[in-house]
Length: 123
Image (cartoon, rainbow, N blue to C red):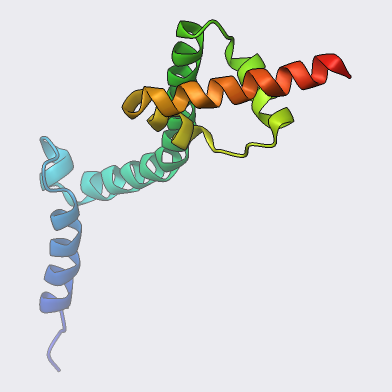
């Protein structure tokens, strides 16, 4: 009886792994065991960093909003509080985009936030 060595199937599975390690350096690209380890680690980092990216983007938006508010004589926290009191519900991504692209509409937002803060002060 002939011994089956899984030639085609083994080559396919190795090629699948080596295709994933394209661009890696040294043995991480050429050696099967190191390539498997590199793929596992890379996928863990990718999974983690998809969540980290969301946090970093929110931080960036807050920094941009704060800078735009400071130019108009208002702090970020009071600006957000004023918007909440005025009943304006915009997410930080949209507000950061307005501050960067359309400063006149952001000025209107700041005015509305100040009106909301004045309404709270009168109570």
